[in-house]
Image 1 (tube, rainbow, N blue to C red):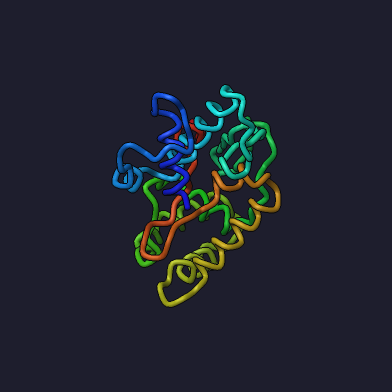
Image 2 (spheres, rainbow, N blue to C red; image 1 turned 90 degrees about the vertical axis):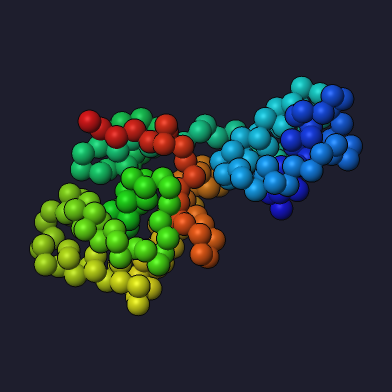
Length: 200
C-alpha cells in the first residue's frame, strides 16, 4: 500500500503539471524499496501540502496528514521518558517495558528478535537504573527471561509497550514511536534520532 501511495505522491511532487492521475513517467519501485517508513511519511506529507496549494483537499488520514505536533522525546538520567519537553507528560511504562523502550531508542538501527540475547547485559544495566530497588538477582532473572529466545516475553512486552502508546497518544504520534517491524526484519522505532533528547 505504501509503495502505491508513495509512487503517486512522488509523481505529484516532481511532475511538471502536478497531475496526480497521470501515469508515472518512470518506474520508482526500486527507489521506494530503499526508503525508510519515516521518509515515505515525509514524502506523503509534502504531497498533501502541495495538493492544498493546488486547491485540492485530500483525505488527511490517507495521505499521512496530521494536525498533531511532531513527537519529541526527552529522557533524563533515570530514563524517565517525557513528551514534548523536559517537563512534559511522562510516558507511563512499567519498569521492564520502559527498559525495553530505552534499549530500542539506543539502537535506532533496530533489533532482530532472534538476536535479542546479545542485548542482555545492556538491558540489565538499563533496568538497573530504572528499578534500583529491585533485587539484583531478581532483575537478572527478569532480563534473562525477557531475552530468552525460547520465551515469548520479549514480544509480549513489545505488545504492552505499543498498546500503552496507542492508549495515551493520537494515532499519528503513536505510530512515530511504536516499535515496529516485519518478521525476519529488525524491530525499530521510526522516530528520528534528532527528536530524541538525552540528558547529559
